[in-house]
Image (cartoon, rainbow, N blue to C red; front, side, top):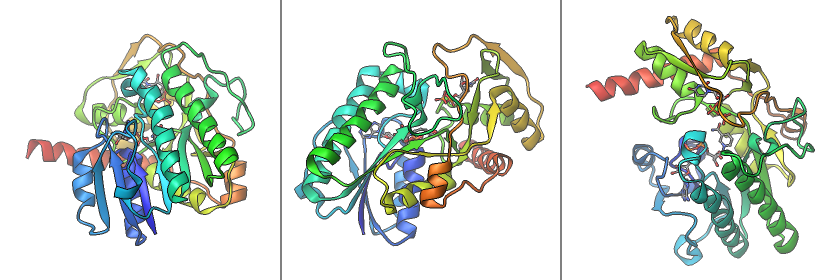
Length: 316
Ligand code: NAD
Ligand code: UDP
C-alpha cells in the first residue's frame, strides 16, 4: 500500500514510518522539519520504498506529484507545549490550513485519512476518566489554545470532509506518548526528566507536582494508530495508557528505574496546565482489541538507554 505520513520526521511519525516500511508498505513522508529530525529521515532513507518531501503542509500539496496514495496519516504539528507555544499563529495554521490541505489531497486521490488529535481537546477536564463523548473544558485565549483549539478545529474539519465529501476518516485522540526517538530539547516531561537525571542535573517540577498524566510507550502507540487506520471506526477514539501517575511520582519512578539520585527544583505552575488526565480506553479495547503492553518502568529503561546512547554519540 502507498501511505503518506505528514509529520513523519517527528517523534511518533518516524516510528510510524519505520513500522509501515517494516510491514512492506511504500511511505511518503511530508515534513517541514520544524521539530522533526533530519537524522530520522536519513535512517528511513535506507528503505527504497521511502520518499521524503521537505514541505510545509500549510502550502497545498500537489496530488499529481505524489502519485497513488491510499492512506494519509496527519501527524504534522509540534506536540510539546514548549514548541507549539513558540509560534502560536503557525500552530493554528498547521492544524487548520495544513489539515485542510491534506484532506483535499485525500478527497482527490480517495485516500483514507487519519488525524492525530490529542487529549488536549478535553482541555482541563472536569471529568475523569475522559471518555470520547466528553466535550472538554478549554480556555480559548490561554497559552495552550493555539494547540487545543487548533486540534478541535482539525477534528471538526475532518468530520466536515466526511459529511460533505465522504472522505473516509479516523480520529485518534492521542494521550501522552514517550520513548526513544524524542529530541533531547523536546521540552516534554519524560525527556526532560530522563536526560537531566542521567546527566546528574536537577529536574524542574512545575507547580506542586500533583498534576497527573498517563504515559504510553511509542511502539504501543504506533500499533494503535495502525490498528485504528485499519478499523472501520470513523468516530474519535482515545489511544494511550490509563496508568495515572503524578508528575512528582514520575520523577521518583525515573530516579528509581535509572538507579540515579534525583535533585528537584520547584518552579511556578504553568498557566492552564491540566491537573488530571486519564483516558477511558473502553472504546479502543472494544473496537480494536488494543491495549498498551509496555510498562512505564520498561519504557523508561528503553528511553534512558536511547538518551545515554545519543549522549555517547555527541561526545564521540
Ligand atoms: P513532534 O513535534 O515530534 O513531531 C511533529 C512533526 O510534525 C515534526 O516532524 C515537525 O517537523 C512536523 N511539522 C510540524 N508542523 C509542520 C508543518 N506545518 N508542515 C509539515 N510538517 C510539520 O510531535 P510528536 O510527539 O511526534 O506528535 C505527533 C502528532 O501526534 C502531533 O500531531 C501531535 O499533536 C500528536 N500528539 C502527540 C502526543 C505525544 O504525547 N507525543 C500526544 C497527543 C497528540
Ligand atoms: N512538567 C514538569 N517539568 C518539566 C516538564 C513538564 O513538571 O520539565 C509537567 C507539566 O507541567 C505537565 C506535565 O509535566 O503538568 C506534562 O507536561 P508535558 O509538557 O510533557 O505534556 P502535556 O502538558 O502536554 O501533557
